[in-house]
Length: 537
Image 1 (cartoon, rainbow, N blue to C red):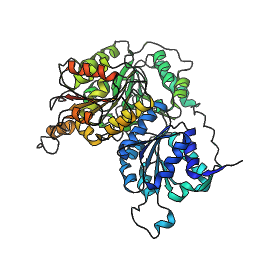
Image 2 (image 1 turned 90 degrees about the vertical axis):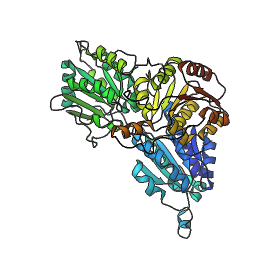
Image 3 (image 1 turned 30 degrees about the vertical axis):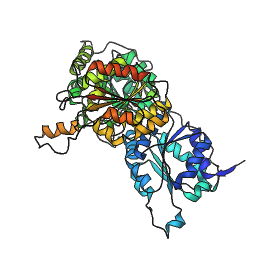
Image 4 (image 1 turned 180 degrees about the vertical axis):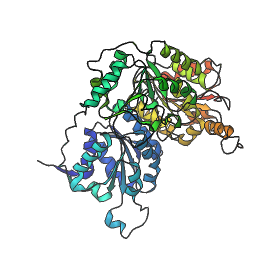
């Protein structure tokens, strides 16, 4: 028996059934029914100061609870403010449901104010875009959740006309049965198992698909049984705890790290790419191995249309089930018998030493020492991200959140807010440069209103440090990278939080300890020298 309710209610209830409990955005008259329906369904709507930050807050929630992220934007400028975060979701594989209000189709024929084609804007940067229809509201909602979460995740856009949101809709969808995991069962699998059995110098490169396939346990079982060292993309940091003797940490941004890791890959006789998505990697990871001379097994969620690398065997399959099938019946044996992996771990540790008296490495080292093992960290784009992504040790998946595909600035603060909202029992710290912080400083107001005691660490060097470094490397004149300093601690206090300035390890250590038990958010402005990253990343 079908039940007639508002079309917006049907959409909201399906999102609730998918596990969604939070939505973010800036309301306008065109989305009031949507907001009402979300709240009625049990999904809390959070007011933010900008739609771009709202999308990153939604993503932060997603990484903690696993449900699709929800972003709500009104017609015209509200929707356009969200373009960056939707493009980020597409490149960073985030199942974001983007809900926009729009003027009714009949009204558009004689009305032009704030009218533009939302779907045309979002079509190139989403997996799908829909216009909600009352008679098909349930089907559209079901399709949106499925498309966003199945295969390689990504954003889906739903444009909701004003009258449709309020119109009686019929939920005729019914939730579909999830597809069973695909596992290779061909002669190629037997070939891959033979390679694993014979490998003396294997390496596994893990990527984000491991997390969406829930394959962390399968990965650990294989690498421990067969003594396979693990390199991860930054999004996959922590799939093997980074204090594990087989963990070689993350890779993708740092030329300094690549000087140690890429030679190891060149020496390998077997390379297993497990859920590895090269969208996170830089040009140094283009064709880093030779599948004509090395055995390369690629286990991935989507066909290789990127051509960043090639493989000897390619399985479009579930990563965990394929790793289990690959290992089943194959005995473990000694690998890298010359101590190469221990030596490499030591070399990487020395390359990113944390012994400096003060500077970006000291800031990262103090934070990792003082903050608990289960701390969730977020990091903004910039020179500090390259250093932190190598130095910050993650001991579980999604322990470090960042924008790695699009590499957008201004993400760390709202990501940290969303993570803290969804996991209030865990310490959460957001690392940002001063330039990135200035993009989203107004969201400190949102943090105060949400009652979050998130910690924000701002690297203050009054420069776009990474761009300045590239400018100097090209021997170009200093232009457009430096800016004046501000009292960031005072800004935090003005928004109702705690603000602290740190100029040494002792100040930082004390501020961190106080922040862990603070009644509201704490911003720590860590002042470092310009050019402090030279030779460090």
